[in-house]
Length: 467
Image (cartoon, rainbow, N blue to C red; front, side):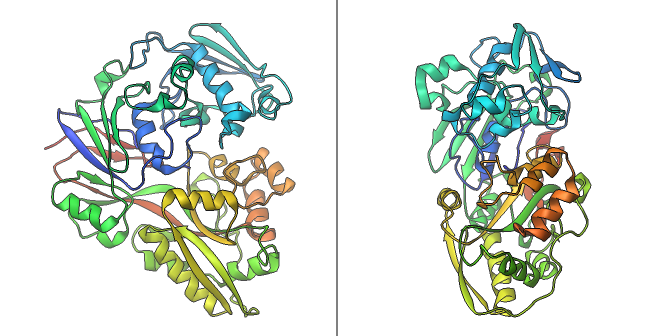
């Protein structure tokens, strides 16, 4: 989750400077899993399907009852001039599923015959058959819509020749191959990543003519806005609504949820009664008002427009509890601090004291992996426009599930896409999380840049250029 996606499709020559809040942890798209990677990966790479559902690398996707036939567009080249072939897809998918890769998104391919067994080291991946350089046949054991998953970076093709030659260094500038409109040419760690036009991009006639994209790492919102006003940044995404009076402020719909997570193995939050009391004490309407424009109180896990229920969480009904102090881990960004302050006020009224434990982005992710703290505030954005992109997050086989919780009933509901049944189990019965607010993409775009379009996956598209 991911995730926010940014695909840059720009017109007119020149350079564009964009703020990114955190530096990527890895650009290995089989392993990447945080929003920090999405800006680079979705600018430099492409999948079988684009974020809007149209075909990208694929010429056709023919779905049958138990198999899928994929035909690649002929003549597509990687940024180094090598032809894209079906084997590159197979290589990418085998690597995604390999136990040694330890990808948090391996389960995306479990509907393929042998995929789960291969991932668990119990069998062979026998559901993939290369027919010729442009054709791949995929045998399926589950009836799911795979098309939307092919728009997400873990399923993208890879180049094993480069991985074998450079090992973990294959994603460094000058080595990382691209199939998208841009390619990475430099990376000044902690400072800036520079992208340049991919001369072999298959859809280059449609992409416009911005030759260079500079991604500047600026964690602090206030500093990013100062740089924007001074002319050092053209675009600043992921802002609080308090900047809405700055020229060029826009707010776009975005499938992203902020939620309060429980580490279920940590006492006393191993007790569902306490989790339910916490959920019932949080005033989400008040929280949304504090966060401002672009934030709506969340009473479901899945957005309603993707099939989520309108109100399936624990209702607001504060009840006094025996005094207890709980550590609360969060990132050191602006919005999480506001969220913490609001929740701390709510829980203090029922006898629960919260102690803030802020971490920078990478360290925060490590704390979630370890389950060190009983409470954490996190977010999830849709990786692709489907309810399962949310529901899969807390499935038993999801490496992104940081709750140390599982429920076979929930897994069954997710598998059958019984959305509201799954939400009832997660939010009411087990109280796995507390949904807090759904957010918009608040962004500053210089007024001299025209033709900006942003999807609900936060994909940026530019149909124009500078005025």
